[in-house]
Image (cartoon, rainbow, N blue to C red; front, side, top):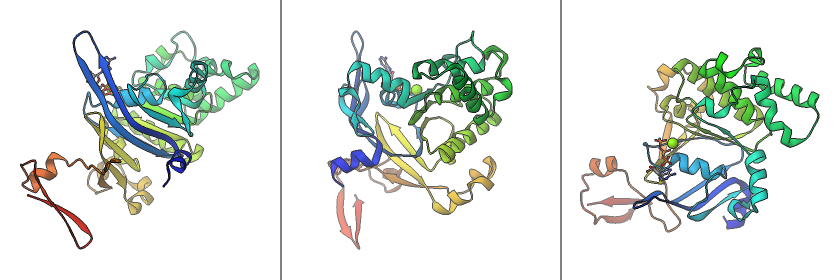
Length: 301
Ligand SMILES: Nc1ncnc2c1ncn2[C@@H]1O[C@H](COP(=O)(O)OP(=O)(O)OP(=O)(O)O)[C@@H](O)[C@H]1O
Ligand SMILES: [Mg+2]
């Protein structure tokens, strides 16, 4: 695939992202040349250990943080080559953000409805249109019965539903969620997961969710694993499994092999092998034998 068609076919392309945080005397390498392509309408979960760089990646895609080197293309546009004014527009209109802490998502002194209306002031339109659209979004996220409640009068899960409606207010192309089910119980987490899938299927919205929640990752067709600031492996849901997804409950989800795991090869054809694989193959040196046999590449000691 040529580079230009890569940029056109994918709503998001991250190319060699490096992020170095410098504090007084230490440097932290949060991203180490991360490569990622996301097609329009995909629902992707990002998982990885604490400190692996997940939030850093999401904040960059959201235009909130600049990479030290590397580029992000959204819809073919180089994000950080944009003018500051275009970047502000991008943050308002192209991406919607849902944070783990619902207090970070909502204004405490506005009702649920007013919270959803607030970002629409930037979009023009009249009061009646804003009101109707906000109600429609609260209905879509299943929380319209709390339209006149203030955040403090709602549970964590209810607040997250309002937060998702707020994130959708300006018709974003990409919805970004950083640990959206981190602060709710498992039943509420299930409801929120189903809501993300519904939004993805019904609106065709591209959604990227950072999560620690394995049950959420099990329901998503593509799971990206970040380790040490790079994507180490990806899991793709098996087709037969995807068809039966609605009939599966959280209990039997754990028992079936839902996804197939792939290692990622970078542009220089480098592949990172997991510790588990090396241990299983009894490889404990840094020199390995590589050969091609029956159309397969075999790595051995
Ligand atoms: N503003 C900052 N200044 C300095 N270091 C930072 C900053 N933000 C993040 N880091 C460091 O960068 C690394 C990646 O952090 P990041 O927040 O992206 O991890 P994460 O995968 O989201 O972790 P968690 O699962 O705990 O949320 C960590 O080592 C972190 O300490
Ligand atoms: Mg984080």
